[in-house]
Length: 80
Image (cartoon, rainbow, N blue to C red; front, side, top):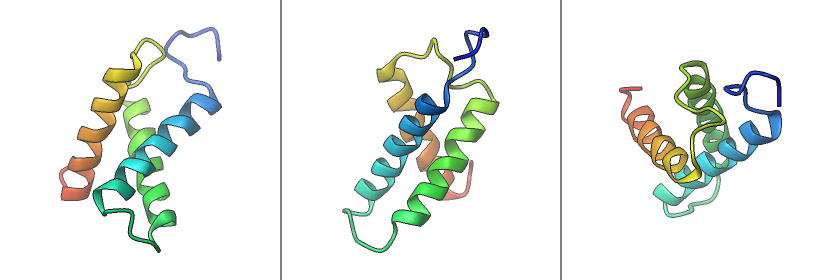
């Protein structure tokens, strides 16, 4: 992690993308054949949230989960 308290490490970013990809798979009932698309959408969503400082090192785990789920709903509906 860098000196800036808002900077997330690569491992934190990766973990959030994995959680987001899981949420996407869960929304589809874990149907096979969508893992790459889920990961790419999750990556775009998390990176946008980090860029907008919606996710920082100060964001607790419960809040992160809620923010990620909400952002994915918006992304899938074309709003985000």
